[in-house]
Image (cartoon, rainbow, N blue to C red; front, side, top):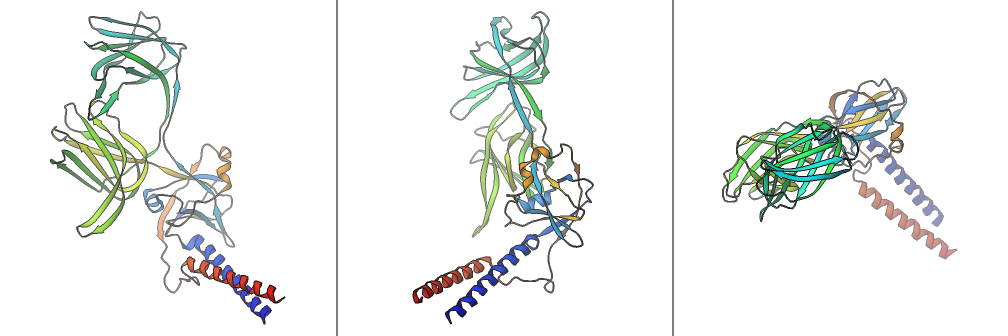
Length: 415
């Protein structure tokens, strides 16, 4: 009788295990919300640029995507590598020495000599002076007799007070290759030169996607002395670039706080949005480069500009971008391939090709994506698993294992 009961429990255990396995296999495809057909591959390796609708449903983990191929007799899963098409800046320091520091009635001079004749495009200068606003001119020469202008009427700035600590002392210019460089500073005060860095920057441009703003709201809070800009993109998008144009022609320097939406909650006063700070910086009339930060996936941005006791700025055009994403896929067999996406519970796939990236061709032919198909099976076609909640499967399996253990111990005692 004990042996018979033991066999029944044992068979039941394997049946439940088989059900779990079947459900896991069905989840490979059935758990995805959408699919797009892929253009017929012509080579083994292809790139697939991901549009915003795929990014929105796959954010933030970007795990919920798979490439499946279908033949007359088989279903294939094609491996891929997810790439962010970000920019890359390599900084190479160039050795130099300070030849002299001098002054005359027109201003102050600092002369640099590079050890080798190599192209440079950036000089960083530091001064002990805490507060200054100087116009400078940068020249290059091969013999210190004939000088050629690289930068003119260029502004460097330092503001240090109770409210802020800001410096802009980067000299950025097009590639130049001289033996000597001379910095002229138009200042009545004596520049207390501290140190400098001479660099050769090699920049690989990233590929951006523009994110149209579906709703924009700008308000001025006079009590808090700040301007609030709310941006809504209408869907979740990757963001790491923000540019704000200011229509005012005056000099300004304002603290800026860039936040992104992470959650929302229903309250008695309505929907409450929860934001997280991504970057705190300065919006100023000197350095007009865009704000760049690590990529965040969000639907809304909230930008706070501190006006202090100044008049609020006249905000102009606002531009928001994010790096593009692509899949590098290996498609070995002839099949009808589809990109499935929108599985929030999917784990990161583990493919061998991630360990052999050096074997992937540098130039890849892109594959076009077809129209989106929303995967909504009808009730008649839908095959429900034995247990919809996987937790119940593990609970039942645990109980069976405990019963098997109890029967085993009982049998051992009787033996």
